[in-house]
Amino acid sequence: MKSKNAEAVILAVVLWFVTYLVIGDNALPGEPLFPMVALFVAANFGGLIQRIQIKSVAIPGLLGMIIVGAVLRNTGALKGRSDDWSSAMRTIALGIILTRGGLALDLSALKTLGRPTVLMSCLPVLGEAVTDLLLAKALTDLPWAWCCMLGFILAAISPAVIVPHLTELQVLRYGTQRGIPSMLLVASGVDVVIAVTGFGICYGIAFESSLALSVAKGPIDIAIGFAASGALAYMYAKLFDSDLCSDGFKAALFLLTGIACTFGFGKLGYSGGGALATMLMGAFVQKLTSYDIKALNQRLADSWDLVAKPLLFGLIGAAIDVETLTGRTVRNGVIILFGGLVVRLAMVNLSIAGKDLTRNERIFVTLAWVPKATVQAALGPSVLDYIRDDDDATPEEEDWAQQILTMSVLAILIAAPLGAAFIEVCAPDFTCTLPHWLLLVHLQQRLVVMPAPWVLPKCVQTGFDP
Image 1 (cartoon, rainbow, N blue to C red):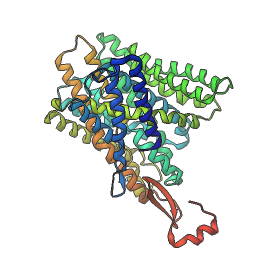
Image 2 (cartoon, helix red, strand yellow):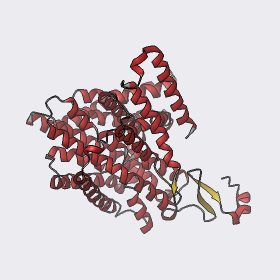
Image 3 (cartoon, rainbow, N blue to C red):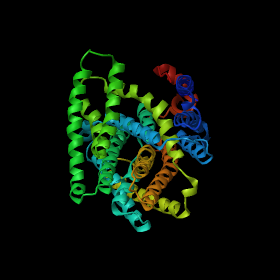
Image 4 (spheres, one colour):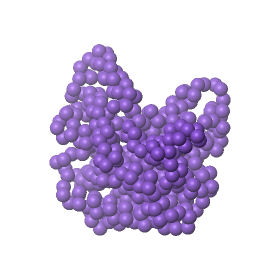
């Protein structure tokens, strides 16, 4: 376990013990607090699965977190877990994802990187969403609005899986001659914006009683997102350029604002507008300030890696009830997932048709667009949360929501490890731009550039320091 993760686990246990001393039996097993702490600690240990490698490819730690959550749920170890607490934790995690995603979204790069990047940002996610919803309508009993929600949930790419890999490849200059990592990083941010916004609009339509309001829901969500993000970006640009407070305070306040947007607009019934506002706040503030945005995003990284990620994927596992799983739902989920992926990959190839890439580079770009995890984990359970909070919800609606959750989990379990493996295995062979006398090797689960043993004298002559 990484030292920071170990520190987070120790602090969580100590915090629980102090809380027990303060509030007494309300912190013991059977009460809402204890299952959350137990799940957080167990999920961190579940993440150690990433130390297991199959042919030099590390298994994503998020799979271990999901498995641990599912085991704890179905063995009764999370007795007393509150659905309200779980829903709130998932919303907080979504707020962190969107806030960091907005900061990583470089709108000016869309113009610089050209038409293929713009197409990569839109065509694959929209093509897959439409395919998924049509397959869902054909295979399941879900209403159209629910099929649309499922389509946008499954269509989103996972920044948590691809961004670390692409950033590392960019540092190592793999594929940088043709801008492959930059193109994928920028496009992934827009991909998530489209998927989350589309889900939010469909979510509002599905649970809106008035037809007129349902039709107006989409434009209202978009207008709210742009207006709120613009105002907040202007305010934070002024704050970032001032010396009124420390960098740590600026980062914390910015993150809390993103979480507040996600929660607040959701409470008002405009979850799509809240998600859009949270994402665009980070994208717009980059254009208005000279502050080091990359450093800001890095400061927020620990909030995701140490707290939100273990809780989010632990909770998505804890939402899986084995007794509710049916072979029909699993079969339908697999068909919908792979059907959507086929169309997504076809749209990727169409998007980069005009870009000067080799055949191997086209294969790499296509396969890198497979991973799914973060958005599915954050949005998959949200429909079930809503149904459980709605006193007028029917058993049929709860079954529909459970189907959406099951298919979201299947997407994570199948696409996350596949996508991560594709990137790690294909990158060195398909995007190689390093000098021929350097080697890319796996060292302690990281890709590291090292000199080939037969050219060590050349390294000394050129001053290369691995």
